[in-house]
Every structure is written in C-alpha cells, then in structure tokens.
Image (tube, rainbow, N blue to C red; front, side, top):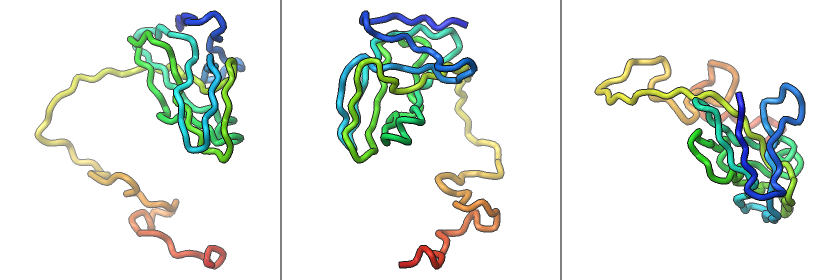
Length: 162
C-alpha cells in the first residue's frame, strides 16, 4: 500500500517510520513557532498527502513530547480524510510550565494510516436493548472493583487527609 506525499516547500520532510514495525510515521514541523504555556498553535508540515482508498490518517501525539515538555496534539486523534489534499497541519497545545519552541525539522506528531468502515445511516424509531443502556460519562465508576462501579467518590484515606 502506498502513501503519496507531495512536498509543498523544498525543505519539507517526508513522513517516515523511525524503526521497522512502528505504527506511526513521524511528522515534522516546516515552520518555527513558540507556544506559550496554556496556548495552542497550528504547526504546518509542508506536505500534502493522498491516502489509499478506504483509509484515513490519524494524527496522534508523540509520547516523548507529552512526558518531557507537556506538549500534545489538541484534537487527538486528528483525522485526515482520504479525499483531503491540503497541507497537513498539527494543532499542538502546551500544557507544560515553559514556552515550547518548534523549529523546522522537529518531530511534532505521528501519523497512523488506518482502514475505515463506511456505513449506511438508517433512521430508527427504537434501538435494541443493551446491558449498558444509556449509561455514559463515568457510569462504570472509578475503581477496578465491580462492587463500587456506581458509587460516588471514595472517602479519603489517612494519607490523603490534610
């Protein structure tokens, strides 16, 4: 399967796998920018892509940037649809305490190419029952024990009390 990549600027870097067997292709900045703590910015890569039919690209954070600098991809995973031909951009957010400077050639994210299923949308008057039902947003609880799955917050332990 081939991923076609067009350089939009001569100094843009093609995405590539850092190691054989890696899931993500490294994406590289094609501009300089400083992102202040709490701020976010669209970082250009200088490339456009043509994905194989039936796929999408997911733009995901780099674990090293997140751990060492507090910088991640804001809309993770960012989706690139198969028909998009514009410049690939990465929205980075700085959750760290210090300004984060991006330079051309810096690894800023990773891109994973995944198959996509298409569905036919059908309006329905009713939906089948399920064990979960309408439970969402924390409905399974916070702990690993099934007996506290629907309980509220746990009482503080001795080492958590002021």
